[in-house]
Length: 255
Image (tube, rainbow, N blue to C red; front, side):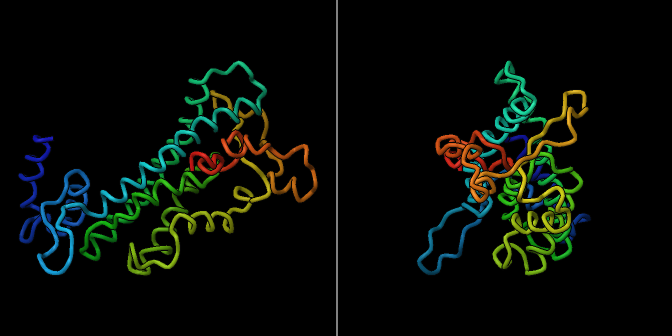
């Protein structure tokens, strides 16, 4: 980390006022403060705690709190996949491996597309990167179906950052939750992929082929409304999360 600190210190003058890369200072500042605690504190006026902790560190704690939902969602994606295909001898590592191959790309696309928009707005407005997307970027894939196309997720994320937050002034001034804005956008723009009346299970094979075009069924609430009690998961299953659903929503325990 010391060598990285030296590299940043050497490059910093190029991004500061008068440097040849001055207009990219917000991007440099975001990267620097993401890696290292900033060395400035609030002015010594009023009853404030003098500390170098910034909002990025606070948001990282929220991201860490969502990790159990992410890890369980990865396993449950694989578990539901093999259960739907009636493959009973799948190992834990196979389930995790399949789940990771489907869920991690969602996380990567969410962060890349969202942070790209954040960086663009920061450079245009000449302000620091809004830290709120550290949380939003994790929330968006957790509330999505595992089989949502990656391009669709990227479009929804970009829409959420621009319309759900930036048009209102950024983090702290938005009147809409960006993650839920992304979900609502997909629900109305692509209802066949986001219908709330079906559950989502990926049935693709390792070779990229599909055994069936889709695997769907009524949600537990749908079965309850139809008085189909035999198809409603038990309390314990629902609490632990051994049920189909969006990536990070199924386990009340992990939430």
